[in-house]
Length: 132
Ligand code: ZN
Image (cartoon, rainbow, N blue to C red):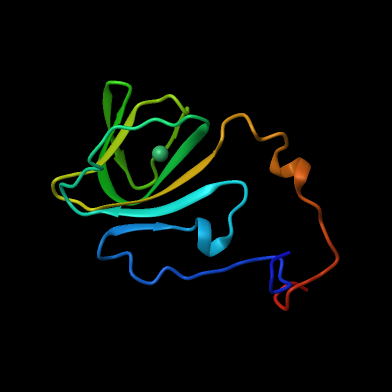
């Protein structure tokens, strides 16, 4: 529960169309993952290759197309592509010359997941107005 007595934080990302990166850590008070929503304009690359010490990353392409560099290999990514990278994986991502690239990047500590959704979810009696 947060300071305001609620069990959640919510936000609306207002202007991603101009490109850029929205990191949700502070706004959502994230405690188990890092989530960023990113948009690279056409023909723009993240300007470095990087790896991580402990976190694996999952890249989910929402829109557009581009290229992914991973440990010396390069491959195309398109809307719907999902790429998981081990912490030590050397990675870079770029938008295609003719397309912006919008993607979510989720970081979590590698090997930290000790249960899956079906083991962790708990069905409750509470119901929103749209459930009968
Ligand atoms: Zn990273």
